[in-house]
Amino acid sequence: MNSKTKKIATIGVLIALGVILTLIKVYQLPYGGAITLAGMVPVVILGYKYGIKWGLFSGLIFSLIQMILGATMSQAFAGMYDPEHVAASVGKMIAMALLDYIVAFTVLGLSGMFKGKIKNDTLAIALGGGTAVFLRFVAHFLSGVILWGSYAEWFFTEVMTNETGKNILAKYSGFSLAAIYSFIYNGSFMIPEIIITVFVVTVLMSVKPLKRLIIDEKA
Image 1 (spheres, helix red, strand yellow):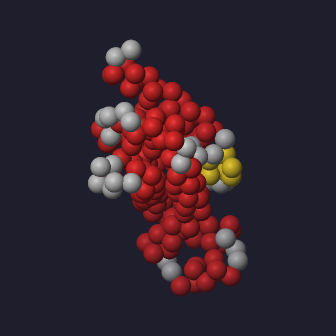
Image 2: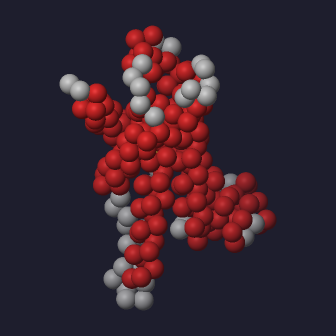
Image 3: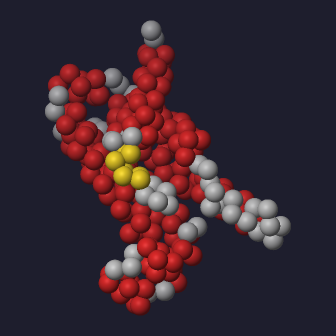
């Protein structure tokens, strides 16, 4: 098996593993988003193992699969059959596909950004992986502000009904309220995802045979 064929085969296997792990949900949020069983780790490993170019390619493939599996896009289609809302709904659907899927999962391939710059490979992949998953959070955060910010008042009125929610609703409005809503909602699953990813890649790198598999092959 030549190098390129082996690389493509490895990418296929790890992407498949990543898809399976994302289907195992530790916690599912009611309006999209979930804490998974280290579902980001396989793409993070690919980004570190093969470099940013192949990492981004792997992340893109992963994003398209996630979009196919998870994108009922029911919210984006709301009002599609009302002629007055067709254009807005199509635009929202496209924006959601880009931010919540293509950008959000493709950036995981940037996990190799510190490879060769930080001598300690464990630290380099942990920092790179954590940063890559954080960039996924940024994509979801922007989507929450731009596309779903109009739900902020409803969220703090009907869902987050504790004193904190009431205080936020009393003090903030408009863009600020939308940003706080998006940060809280997306952070509730993305912060655990960052922690899980960093923890798992650190553990994997502590096992010498696995570490060799992750770092030996050149991009």
